[in-house]
Image 1 (cartoon, helix red, strand yellow):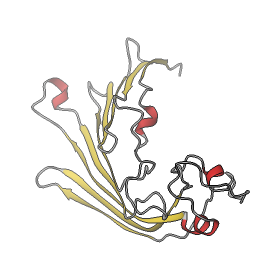
Image 2 (cartoon, rainbow, N blue to C red):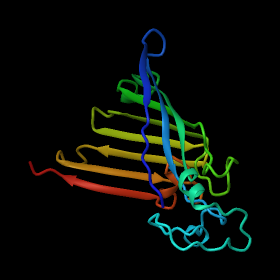
Image 3 (cartoon, rainbow, N blue to C red):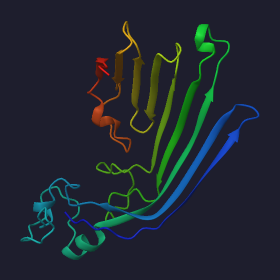
Length: 237
């Protein structure tokens, strides 16, 4: 397989806005544009599944004895086309819009209405100017093309210090529209359980999506790895 690492130029900016008059939130914006990011693909008549035999190249990229186009093959590129046009690159735009909010909610009962709550959220966006699997294929979204033109990820999380600082919860949610992948994270840290030096830590990570749906978020790698944990920790000193 041919690996190449071309130059790319990245331009970007970041800015924040403090909306202290109305919501009290801090809004964040980050943008970047990369001019040329490489895409390494091995194309053959089988659509990238048997390049060594169909194209006469082994996995290290050296030329082996040329073999005929296999039965059912639609296209068998020559050596020159394979070496030069099999490489492709794309410009990539990345965007992040988010917010951070630290405040109290006085309408909540008990100490929850007096304690500080922290909320944060983000919308992550990636746009690939050219999502073709290879320069030899002019069609987008080919069957073996995993580089989708638009990639999105939404995240939301919150935390705080409650019950006079004894309870530290954390909840988070992430969703990928492309792969329809979800992530739900719940965990809590309780200081001084029964004893001053005894802490309790419990949590749950739940992935309700399908592992066969792939995208740039990589949530599919953990789709079947739901995890629950509990830990007791005692401090001697």
